[in-house]
Amino acid sequence: RVGKGVVIARSLKTGEWNPPAFIKFRQASWGIQAGIQEAELVLLVVTKKGLKQLFKRQFSLTEGPQLAIGPIGKTLDLNLDKLLSRNDILAYSRIKGLFAGLSFEDTIISSDKYTNYEYYQQVVSNRSLLIGEKGIKIPLSGQVFLKSVKRLETQAGNKR
Image (tube, rainbow, N blue to C red):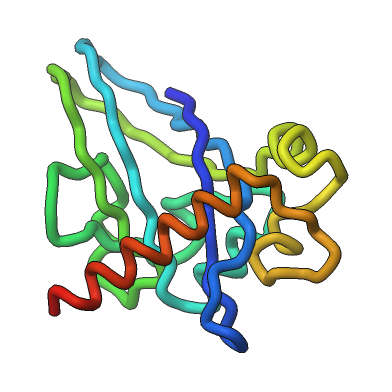
């Protein structure tokens, strides 16, 4: 299984959202399996250790930061030992489709350097984007995305 995604981080200094960074993931598995499955995954990074993992070229969810399944939705098959210890990343997922079997999996997340380059029209690392390094011009679609996140954040805050 393979996929792509976007990661954003809030600036600790200003409280504003930094430019989006593009990632890709692949999940290696082995075992007896059958089915059709579509998954949506949101990773909520809650510690500096978790964020620093995203600065790396790639890292493994089952060997890297401590990961916990979020409180809603069906879950992806992840390492249960990691779920019981201190958490650096919370995972929320929604899975559709039929799937059956026994499998052993490892999910690797890596920087999508090609998509970052295509989007920003310059070589830029996920670290530079996630810390909000100066001199990175955010395309209009990225500005609209960040405004939408801010608006949703404000709406969620008003509902508390």
